[in-house]
Image 1: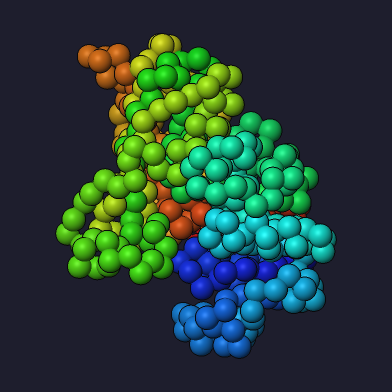
Image 2: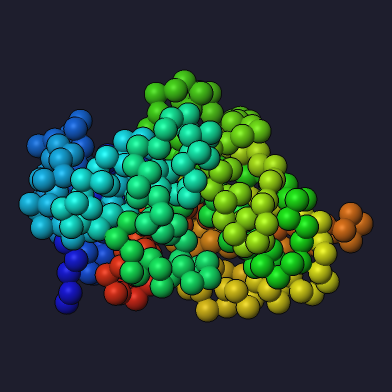
Amino acid sequence: MQKIKTAVVGASGYTGMELLRLLLMHPNAELTCVTSRQYAGQPLSSVFPRFSQMAGSEVAFTEPDAETIKASGAEIAFLALPHGVAAAYATALLELGVKVIDLSADFRLNDPDVYEEFYGAVHPAQELLKEAVYGMPELPQRSEAIAKARLIASPGCYPTSIILPLVPLLQNGLIDPQSIVTCSMSGVSGAGKSSNVLFSFCEANESVRAYSAPKHRHLSEIEQELSIAASEPVAMSFTPHLVPTHNGICTTTSAKLIGSPESIGKALEAAYADKEFVRLLGEGSTADTKNVTRTNFIDIGWAVDERTGRVLLFSAEDNLGKGAAGQAVQSFNLVAGLPTQAGLQNI
Protein backbone atom coordinates (compact mmCIF):
# COMPACT_ATOMS: atom_id res chain seq x y z
CA MET A 1 0.00 0.00 0.00
CA GLN A 2 1.24 3.46 -0.92
CA LYS A 3 2.54 5.40 2.09
CA ILE A 4 3.11 9.16 1.96
CA LYS A 5 5.83 10.34 4.34
CA THR A 6 4.36 13.16 6.35
CA ALA A 7 5.37 15.76 8.94
CA VAL A 8 3.34 17.79 11.42
CA VAL A 9 4.97 21.04 12.49
CA GLY A 10 3.58 22.37 15.76
CA ALA A 11 1.99 19.10 16.76
CA SER A 12 1.35 19.75 20.45
CA GLY A 13 -1.77 21.95 20.24
CA TYR A 14 -5.38 20.82 19.94
CA THR A 15 -5.39 20.96 16.15
CA GLY A 16 -1.98 19.32 16.02
CA MET A 17 -3.18 16.50 18.25
CA GLU A 18 -6.21 15.95 16.03
CA LEU A 19 -3.95 15.88 12.98
CA LEU A 20 -1.79 13.26 14.67
CA ARG A 21 -4.85 11.14 15.46
CA LEU A 22 -6.04 11.24 11.85
CA LEU A 23 -2.62 10.60 10.34
CA LEU A 24 -1.76 7.75 12.70
CA MET A 25 -4.94 5.99 11.57
CA HIS A 26 -4.59 6.96 7.90
CA PRO A 27 -3.87 3.92 5.74
CA ASN A 28 -1.68 5.92 3.35
CA ALA A 29 0.21 8.22 5.72
CA GLU A 30 3.50 7.55 7.47
CA LEU A 31 4.47 10.02 10.16
CA THR A 32 8.20 10.63 9.86
CA CYS A 33 8.55 13.92 11.75
CA VAL A 34 6.59 15.78 14.43
CA THR A 35 7.85 18.99 15.96
CA SER A 36 7.45 20.82 19.24
CA ARG A 37 10.01 22.89 21.09
CA GLN A 38 8.33 22.07 24.39
CA TYR A 39 8.40 18.29 23.91
CA ALA A 40 11.54 17.82 21.76
CA GLY A 41 13.07 14.41 22.41
CA GLN A 42 9.93 12.82 23.82
CA PRO A 43 7.99 10.18 21.86
CA LEU A 44 4.38 10.80 20.85
CA SER A 45 3.20 8.03 23.16
CA SER A 46 4.73 9.83 26.15
CA VAL A 47 3.24 13.24 25.41
CA PHE A 48 -0.10 11.81 24.23
CA PRO A 49 -0.66 8.48 26.03
CA ARG A 50 -3.87 7.97 24.03
CA PHE A 51 -1.66 7.10 21.04
CA SER A 52 0.32 4.41 22.89
CA GLN A 53 0.88 1.18 20.93
CA MET A 54 -0.40 2.73 17.71
CA ALA A 55 1.95 2.31 14.76
CA GLY A 56 3.95 5.51 14.51
CA SER A 57 3.55 6.55 18.14
CA GLU A 58 7.22 5.81 18.77
CA VAL A 59 8.23 8.83 16.66
CA ALA A 60 9.85 11.45 18.89
CA PHE A 61 9.18 15.16 18.79
CA THR A 62 12.00 17.27 17.32
CA GLU A 63 12.78 20.96 17.23
CA PRO A 64 10.97 22.66 14.31
CA ASP A 65 13.70 22.87 11.68
CA ALA A 66 13.12 22.72 7.93
CA GLU A 67 16.29 20.74 7.22
CA THR A 68 15.39 18.15 9.87
CA ILE A 69 11.88 17.82 8.42
CA LYS A 70 13.29 17.31 4.92
CA ALA A 71 15.86 14.80 6.20
CA SER A 72 13.03 12.71 7.69
CA GLY A 73 11.88 12.00 4.16
CA ALA A 74 8.65 13.98 4.54
CA GLU A 75 6.99 14.75 1.22
CA ILE A 76 4.13 16.78 2.69
CA ALA A 77 4.21 18.89 5.85
CA PHE A 78 1.23 20.17 7.83
CA LEU A 79 1.83 23.47 9.63
CA ALA A 80 -0.22 23.74 12.83
CA LEU A 81 1.44 26.97 13.87
CA PRO A 82 0.26 30.49 14.79
CA HIS A 83 -0.20 33.04 12.02
CA GLY A 84 2.94 35.06 11.42
CA VAL A 85 5.09 32.06 12.38
CA ALA A 86 3.95 29.56 9.76
CA ALA A 87 5.05 31.62 6.75
CA ALA A 88 8.77 31.28 7.47
CA TYR A 89 8.51 27.50 7.76
CA ALA A 90 6.40 27.29 4.61
CA THR A 91 8.97 29.28 2.66
CA ALA A 92 11.88 27.14 3.87
CA LEU A 93 10.07 23.83 3.27
CA LEU A 94 8.95 24.79 -0.22
CA GLU A 95 12.53 25.67 -1.12
CA LEU A 96 13.52 22.16 -0.04
CA GLY A 97 10.83 20.57 -2.21
CA VAL A 98 8.37 19.69 0.58
CA LYS A 99 4.73 20.44 -0.16
CA VAL A 100 2.94 22.43 2.55
CA ILE A 101 -0.58 22.38 3.97
CA ASP A 102 -0.79 25.40 6.25
CA LEU A 103 -3.51 25.50 8.89
CA SER A 104 -2.66 29.05 9.99
CA ALA A 105 -4.06 32.19 8.38
CA ASP A 106 -0.80 33.16 6.68
CA PHE A 107 -1.79 32.19 3.13
CA ARG A 108 -5.59 32.32 3.17
CA LEU A 109 -5.87 35.89 1.90
CA ASN A 110 -5.15 37.02 -1.64
CA ASP A 111 -4.47 40.65 -0.70
CA PRO A 112 -1.53 41.44 1.61
CA ASP A 113 -3.18 44.73 2.58
CA VAL A 114 -6.20 42.85 3.92
CA TYR A 115 -3.86 40.58 5.88
CA GLU A 116 -2.18 43.60 7.44
CA GLU A 117 -5.56 45.16 8.25
CA PHE A 118 -6.91 42.09 10.05
CA TYR A 119 -3.72 40.61 11.51
CA GLY A 120 -1.87 43.79 12.40
CA ALA A 121 1.41 43.03 10.63
CA VAL A 122 2.95 43.16 7.18
CA HIS A 123 2.58 39.80 5.46
CA PRO A 124 5.85 37.87 5.91
CA ALA A 125 5.89 36.09 2.52
CA GLN A 126 3.86 38.10 0.05
CA GLU A 127 5.48 36.46 -2.98
CA LEU A 128 3.70 33.18 -2.10
CA LEU A 129 0.17 34.58 -1.81
CA LYS A 130 -0.59 34.27 -5.51
CA GLU A 131 0.54 30.66 -5.50
CA ALA A 132 -1.36 29.47 -2.42
CA VAL A 133 -4.66 27.63 -2.98
CA TYR A 134 -7.49 28.13 -0.49
CA GLY A 135 -8.10 24.55 0.55
CA MET A 136 -11.86 24.10 0.68
CA PRO A 137 -12.32 21.09 -1.63
CA GLU A 138 -16.09 21.47 -2.04
CA LEU A 139 -15.84 24.87 -3.75
CA PRO A 140 -16.09 24.91 -7.56
CA GLN A 141 -12.88 23.80 -9.32
CA ARG A 142 -11.07 23.85 -5.99
CA SER A 143 -10.32 20.12 -5.78
CA GLU A 144 -8.44 20.27 -9.07
CA ALA A 145 -6.42 23.28 -7.93
CA ILE A 146 -5.58 21.65 -4.58
CA ALA A 147 -4.39 18.48 -6.29
CA LYS A 148 -1.87 20.46 -8.35
CA ALA A 149 -0.72 22.81 -5.57
CA ARG A 150 2.45 22.75 -3.54
CA LEU A 151 1.11 25.30 -1.00
CA ILE A 152 -2.40 24.94 0.40
CA ALA A 153 -4.00 27.40 2.82
CA SER A 154 -6.43 25.34 4.87
CA PRO A 155 -9.51 27.39 5.83
CA GLY A 156 -10.49 28.54 9.29
CA CYS A 157 -13.18 26.79 11.31
CA TYR A 158 -15.77 29.58 11.34
CA PRO A 159 -15.30 30.30 7.61
CA THR A 160 -15.99 26.68 6.69
CA SER A 161 -19.32 26.73 8.52
CA ILE A 162 -20.33 30.00 6.85
CA ILE A 163 -18.90 29.78 3.33
CA LEU A 164 -20.20 26.36 2.33
CA PRO A 165 -23.91 27.09 2.92
CA LEU A 166 -23.70 30.50 1.25
CA VAL A 167 -21.62 29.94 -1.89
CA PRO A 168 -24.27 28.10 -3.98
CA LEU A 169 -26.86 30.75 -3.15
CA LEU A 170 -24.56 33.62 -4.08
CA GLN A 171 -23.43 31.95 -7.30
CA ASN A 172 -27.04 31.52 -8.35
CA GLY A 173 -28.13 35.04 -7.35
CA LEU A 174 -30.64 33.74 -4.81
CA ILE A 175 -29.79 36.15 -1.96
CA ASP A 176 -28.83 39.79 -1.58
CA PRO A 177 -25.02 39.74 -1.05
CA GLN A 178 -25.16 42.83 1.17
CA SER A 179 -27.80 41.46 3.56
CA ILE A 180 -25.85 38.60 5.17
CA VAL A 181 -25.83 38.34 8.96
CA THR A 182 -24.15 35.42 10.74
CA CYS A 183 -23.92 34.29 14.36
CA SER A 184 -21.68 31.35 15.25
CA MET A 185 -21.01 29.44 18.46
CA SER A 186 -17.77 27.57 19.05
CA GLY A 187 -16.38 25.22 21.65
CA VAL A 188 -13.46 26.45 23.75
CA SER A 189 -10.87 24.34 21.90
CA GLY A 190 -11.19 26.86 19.07
CA ALA A 191 -9.05 29.24 21.13
CA GLY A 192 -6.19 26.73 21.19
CA LYS A 193 -4.09 25.98 24.25
CA SER A 194 -4.35 29.55 25.45
CA SER A 195 -3.21 30.80 28.84
CA ASN A 196 -5.83 33.56 28.63
CA VAL A 197 -7.95 33.40 31.78
CA LEU A 198 -11.11 33.98 29.72
CA PHE A 199 -10.74 30.48 28.29
CA SER A 200 -10.14 28.77 31.64
CA PHE A 201 -12.74 26.30 32.95
CA CYS A 202 -14.15 28.57 35.63
CA GLU A 203 -14.60 31.47 33.21
CA ALA A 204 -16.00 29.49 30.26
CA ASN A 205 -18.11 26.85 31.98
CA GLU A 206 -21.84 27.59 32.42
CA SER A 207 -21.44 30.75 30.35
CA VAL A 208 -22.05 31.95 26.78
CA ARG A 209 -20.60 35.18 25.44
CA ALA A 210 -19.86 36.99 22.20
CA TYR A 211 -16.29 37.99 21.45
CA SER A 212 -14.12 39.66 18.80
CA ALA A 213 -17.07 41.64 17.46
CA PRO A 214 -17.55 43.32 15.07
CA LYS A 215 -14.31 42.40 13.26
CA HIS A 216 -13.17 38.85 13.94
CA ARG A 217 -10.06 37.97 11.93
CA HIS A 218 -11.84 35.18 10.09
CA LEU A 219 -14.18 37.76 8.56
CA SER A 220 -11.41 38.62 6.09
CA GLU A 221 -11.33 35.19 4.43
CA ILE A 222 -15.10 34.79 4.65
CA GLU A 223 -15.72 38.01 2.73
CA GLN A 224 -12.97 37.14 0.25
CA GLU A 225 -14.51 33.79 -0.72
CA LEU A 226 -18.09 35.09 -0.69
CA SER A 227 -17.06 37.99 -2.94
CA ILE A 228 -15.58 35.51 -5.42
CA ALA A 229 -18.84 33.53 -5.40
CA ALA A 230 -21.02 36.63 -5.78
CA SER A 231 -18.76 38.27 -8.40
CA GLU A 232 -18.98 41.48 -6.38
CA PRO A 233 -17.61 42.77 -3.06
CA VAL A 234 -19.45 41.30 -0.08
CA ALA A 235 -19.52 42.94 3.35
CA MET A 236 -21.37 41.13 6.11
CA SER A 237 -21.94 41.05 9.86
CA PHE A 238 -20.36 38.18 11.80
CA THR A 239 -20.59 37.66 15.56
CA PRO A 240 -18.82 34.64 17.10
CA HIS A 241 -19.76 33.27 20.52
CA LEU A 242 -17.94 31.06 22.99
CA VAL A 243 -19.97 28.19 24.45
CA PRO A 244 -18.98 25.76 27.23
CA THR A 245 -18.22 22.71 25.11
CA HIS A 246 -14.86 21.26 24.10
CA ASN A 247 -15.42 21.27 20.36
CA GLY A 248 -18.06 21.91 17.72
CA ILE A 249 -19.35 24.93 15.81
CA CYS A 250 -23.00 25.80 15.25
CA THR A 251 -23.72 28.63 12.82
CA THR A 252 -26.92 30.41 11.81
CA THR A 253 -26.80 32.70 8.79
CA SER A 254 -29.61 34.79 7.35
CA ALA A 255 -29.91 36.85 4.18
CA LYS A 256 -32.61 38.55 2.12
CA LEU A 257 -34.14 36.05 -0.29
CA ILE A 258 -34.23 37.04 -3.96
CA GLY A 259 -34.98 33.66 -5.54
CA SER A 260 -37.90 31.38 -4.85
CA PRO A 261 -37.98 29.32 -1.63
CA GLU A 262 -37.72 26.13 -3.70
CA SER A 263 -34.55 27.34 -5.38
CA ILE A 264 -32.57 27.21 -2.12
CA GLY A 265 -32.73 23.45 -1.78
CA LYS A 266 -32.16 22.93 -5.49
CA ALA A 267 -28.99 25.06 -5.45
CA LEU A 268 -27.57 23.28 -2.41
CA GLU A 269 -28.37 19.86 -3.86
CA ALA A 270 -26.75 20.75 -7.18
CA ALA A 271 -23.60 21.94 -5.40
CA TYR A 272 -23.18 19.21 -2.81
CA ALA A 273 -25.09 16.07 -3.80
CA ASP A 274 -21.82 14.33 -4.71
CA LYS A 275 -19.65 15.81 -1.94
CA GLU A 276 -18.74 13.13 0.57
CA PHE A 277 -18.53 15.31 3.67
CA VAL A 278 -21.46 17.70 3.15
CA ARG A 279 -24.74 16.35 4.53
CA LEU A 280 -27.83 18.28 3.50
CA LEU A 281 -30.54 17.97 6.13
CA GLY A 282 -33.35 19.47 4.06
CA GLU A 283 -35.71 22.39 4.51
CA GLY A 284 -36.97 22.91 8.03
CA SER A 285 -34.11 20.94 9.63
CA THR A 286 -31.51 22.47 11.91
CA ALA A 287 -27.96 21.24 12.47
CA ASP A 288 -26.73 19.80 15.78
CA THR A 289 -23.09 19.67 16.87
CA LYS A 290 -23.54 16.30 18.59
CA ASN A 291 -23.97 14.73 15.15
CA VAL A 292 -20.71 16.08 13.69
CA THR A 293 -18.15 16.16 16.50
CA ARG A 294 -15.29 13.71 15.97
CA THR A 295 -16.19 13.53 12.27
CA ASN A 296 -15.29 15.37 9.08
CA PHE A 297 -18.90 16.14 8.18
CA ILE A 298 -20.61 19.49 7.91
CA ASP A 299 -24.39 19.32 8.26
CA ILE A 300 -26.49 22.00 6.54
CA GLY A 301 -30.19 22.73 6.93
CA TRP A 302 -32.30 25.71 5.92
CA ALA A 303 -35.63 27.45 6.28
CA VAL A 304 -37.39 30.37 4.64
CA ASP A 305 -38.90 33.06 6.85
CA GLU A 306 -41.76 34.30 4.66
CA ARG A 307 -42.67 36.94 7.22
CA THR A 308 -39.33 38.76 6.80
CA GLY A 309 -38.41 37.54 3.32
CA ARG A 310 -35.15 36.03 4.55
CA VAL A 311 -33.56 32.62 4.20
CA LEU A 312 -32.06 30.97 7.28
CA LEU A 313 -29.08 28.62 6.89
CA PHE A 314 -28.08 26.26 9.70
CA SER A 315 -24.73 24.47 9.81
CA ALA A 316 -22.72 22.42 12.28
CA GLU A 317 -19.21 20.99 12.17
CA ASP A 318 -16.36 19.98 14.43
CA ASN A 319 -14.00 22.94 14.67
CA LEU A 320 -11.05 20.55 15.08
CA GLY A 321 -12.33 18.20 12.35
CA LYS A 322 -13.97 19.64 9.24
CA GLY A 323 -13.01 23.09 10.52
CA ALA A 324 -9.29 22.26 10.80
CA ALA A 325 -7.48 18.90 10.80
CA GLY A 326 -10.05 16.87 8.85
CA GLN A 327 -10.31 19.39 6.05
CA ALA A 328 -6.50 19.57 5.88
CA VAL A 329 -6.38 15.78 5.49
CA GLN A 330 -8.90 16.09 2.63
CA SER A 331 -6.36 18.33 0.89
CA PHE A 332 -3.58 15.87 1.74
CA ASN A 333 -5.56 13.14 -0.01
CA LEU A 334 -6.02 15.27 -3.11
CA VAL A 335 -2.34 16.23 -3.27
CA ALA A 336 -1.33 12.59 -2.84
CA GLY A 337 -3.76 11.37 -5.51
CA LEU A 338 -5.81 9.39 -2.98
CA PRO A 339 -9.58 9.08 -2.61
CA THR A 340 -10.98 12.14 -0.83
CA GLN A 341 -12.39 9.98 1.96
CA ALA A 342 -9.13 8.16 2.75
CA GLY A 343 -8.52 8.07 6.49
CA LEU A 344 -11.64 10.11 7.20
CA GLN A 345 -14.52 7.66 6.88
CA ASN A 346 -14.35 5.93 10.24
CA ILE A 347 -12.89 8.48 12.60
